[in-house]
Image (cartoon, rainbow, N blue to C red):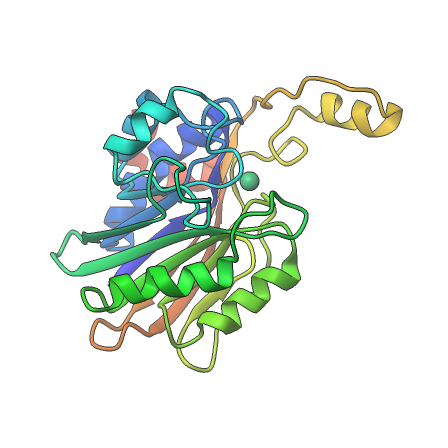
Length: 272
Ligand code: FE2
């Protein structure tokens, strides 16, 4: 089974390259399932129902989120009726939506997806290390292949989650920092790990925000309203191959594709 995990889709540039690249990758890479973090898909802040529906139409099967999940208030009506849009499982009881998903791949195999959020330099949610085990246990009887999106700031917390889940899931992929790390590896008990999958969005920016605005805030310390950068997008993510019998990862490949790369990847989808 081959799974594409797409790093945080940010604003229109991110949506545009995702729209062009994902169908091409599904075909070229014989992908069975696609997961994407979408918490910054609506102009950098949150997600709406219309944008979520559009991202599903690109070939994404399940969408994960993080600290920005509630930025657009309309998501409060959408998320309870859309099981393919997850919010971190370690939000307190009473938060709308769900933190895990059980579905089937294009070839009919069961797959589970879990979304949890870190607590270092972030909102103090419930213990992600305990909550993720509960979510995995609930999925385990039905799916051998399980992928975890750990939306977190601190590298140490993310690496710890990788080791915590080694041998328990197929992959642990970090999101949130918008900068792809180069520590992709398969841990000893068969779990694919990457500290951060990176950003699918405008890379001529400061992690998605217009450079001048974010830089001015650093230079002056004065408040400034962040705006999503424009300009061409780049797709960051990872492709993991899973052994269906064991759920272990057998290969892991990082992706960082420019718009020009996507043109050559699938000329038939360019400009569509
Ligand atoms: Fe985030």
